[in-house]
Image: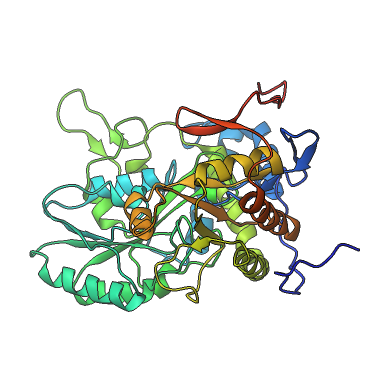
Length: 442
């Protein structure tokens, strides 16, 4: 019988929906192979088995949406339009909220930014992922810095909105940090925004895969999310929320489907509703995949939260045994969070750690600044580190994966890598790497 690790939390992990590639084996530079431990769900999550099956079921019926008279087109139109209601239910939206399908969270936030009324004041924390930090431009964008507690976040937003000029106002909020996994006080922030007559948009990209989202209950006006983080990696995302700003804005893309009529001369008659901003042939397969993923995650929400909570507790207990490891956090170690942990290790290069974890142990993690440069640099202030390592858990994570990375980190800190590595284009890679890519994908 295997020895129980000293960081074991002693609990069984609830069963959750299965993902494609759960038994994937990857080659090791030291010889042989290992089951791939995907601990990078926060970047892109694997595909749910149920999503793969749903896509395969749709593919024989694939045809044009909205504009085809054939029966297959009618099937795809029903699938595409039905997905809007699935997304509306998934995020707990109001019946009147629009669901606009986009490529991803970044695309959705840029769409909203393009639809803002003139002279809108935008208030955004510097902790945001670049998708939520960068789309806003102009003199009326107010950056709130980085709060040290949820209470300070509420105070900062209250003060900033009080100082905004007259006119429309939008507060940009995150549900869960993509750097630390910590949950933000969305309901309180939304309440403060309403008191100042401001609207809110919730970046739910990191929250929705882990916890239920209910934007009507939270008092949020808009929400955005990505399929590739929701176990539906087929290129679809969504902007969900109030439609008045969107109906008055210029179409996000000019093209077929966005128009009612294009006269020979005169002004184009643009559609209202979601079609106004969904020009071109839609990503029917991606939208169907996203909707199916939302159905599965909603059905198993309690088990998913229990699964990730137990694995996260086991992971953090294990990481606490690694000499010199410093976990990054905004609001303190006891603050509620989803399954994301970022850290540095004294005297260790994060990029080299990530490379060795992959090459020698079959573990995938992320190293760098995680497209949240301001937040990570703030959290690294006072240390020698320029980057960090991020572990992000999900449906594909097992107890063995958690134990393997803790054991691997303890070994790397104590003895260093077994293989030699060199920098190539700023990334550490194994010297004379003997591993071969799969022949069909090379």
